[in-house]
Amino acid sequence: MYVLVIALTAAVIVYLLHVMARLSKDDYSALANRMARRSRSSLTLLKPCPLCHTMLSRGERVHTVVFSKDPVGVDGRPRPARIKESMVHMFGCAYCRPPNGTQPRICPVCKRQIRDDGFAIARMFERDGRKHMHVLGCTECRHGR
Ligand SMILES: [Zn+2]
Ligand SMILES: [Zn+2]
Image (cartoon, rainbow, N blue to C red; front, side):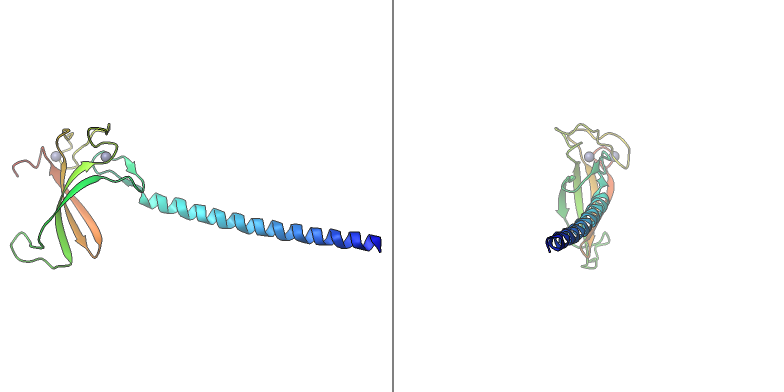
C-alpha cells in the first residue's frame, strides 16, 4: 500500500513536470515569435534622414515646416481634391539640425552642404493618406528659381 502511494505520487510529479515543460516551451516559442515580429517591424520603420542619411528609428523625426496650398495646379486649374500639395521646408533630424546636430546636411539636389541658417525645400503630395515627398533643392540652389 505504502509503495503504491509513492508510485502514484511519482507518476503525478512526472506528469506535472511534463505539463510544465510543454507550457514553458509554448511560452518560449510565443515569445520568440513576438520578438521576431518586433524586429521585423522596427526594421521597416528605419528610414534615412534625407539630408544627412542617418538611419532614423520610430520617434526620430525630420523637422519640417509644411505650407499647405490650395489644391490648384500650376496651370491654375483645380487639381483633383484627393491630391493635396504642400510646400515643405526641411530642417533635418536630431543628428543634423543646427545648432545641436553634428552631421553635415547635404542637399540631395546640388550635393552641397546646407548652411546653418538654410534648409531644404520639398514638395509634398498627399493622396489617400499617403505622403510622397519630393526634394526640389536647398536655400543655396533653389534661390531665385
Ligand atoms: Zn539628418
Ligand atoms: Zn541645393
